[in-house]
Length: 172
Length: 56
Image 1 (cartoon, chains in turn yellow, purple):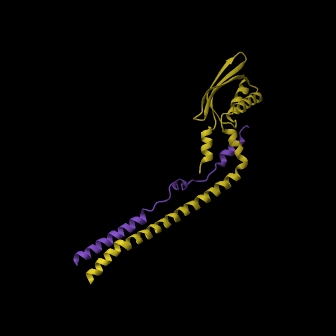
Image 2 (tube, each protein chain N blue to C red):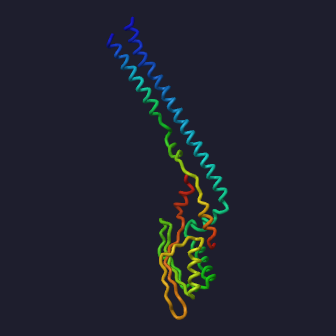
Image 3 (tube, rainbow over the protein chains, first blue to last red):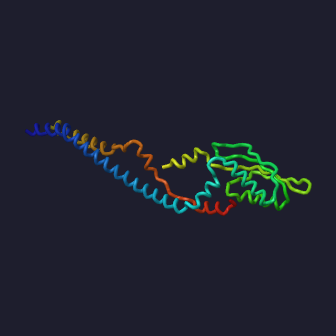
């Protein structure tokens, strides 16, 4: 009788109990994982809400960012600003040329020369460095001819590549 | 008899192990991991203020 009971227990254990227990434990495992996912999602929702709040607070200031790092080079706008700087500082712009555009890097190299008096040149450079559109001056050469100085600037200007922009908007 | 008892013990241990495995090896639906990445919402307002102070 005992032998029969033992055999029956073993058979029941393998045939009936094992699959049932496995299903139950699998479901319990899934529930605990889903709870973890819900917790993480709630945390993410909170962060997204916080980010939205921050973005709304700073919305008025955001156009300045587009002005500093516009999407694409925006040549015309940049040239107009340079003209304005030259007019304001009294420097006569002799030449502006873009020597290299690195689209993947979001950077363009340019050469620019202008002539005027020392103070005018100084003001021109200071204004150029303080431009809202980000300009990096790599080198500056000043030479004197006749009664005025000529400054030759080699620099870089940044812009946001379209790929970066689409990545930025596509981030989750 | 002894053989049956040892078989029962072995089967019980095996079933226990299998149950534990099925608990541990539950998998999340595909692709859900990439939505669970944690990021810090931070906006550097100071930079925007500094840019605003510059010449337009």
